[in-house]
Image (cartoon, rainbow, N blue to C red; front, side):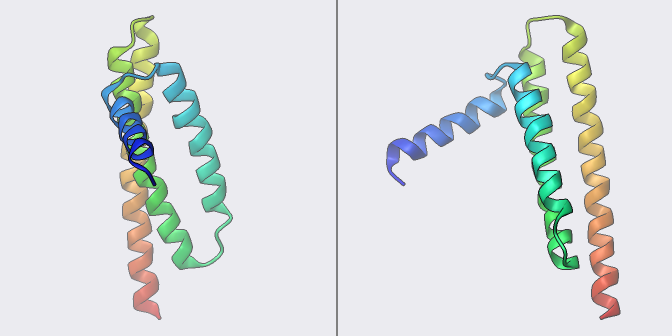
Length: 115
């Protein structure tokens, strides 16, 4: 990868986590659409090991995109309602991801100890 492409990716991530993208784009594209695609992919995994790893990676994505949504909601200039609702979705997703990861890791521990 050349230096320009690497710099563009770093700029994208910096922009995403600074709240520079529009809330509507981050929420609907990153939070909803990509999350649904990732969830569908993870649901098609067949082995216990791949499912546990997939769930943990999905949780990491959900937490990161929730932070990006929160940042975009903080810089949102429109109706306050949309900003508040986006932040509520972010909080619920972060808690759900944390508890989901704990459950997945607990399942993994039980699976390993039984084999």
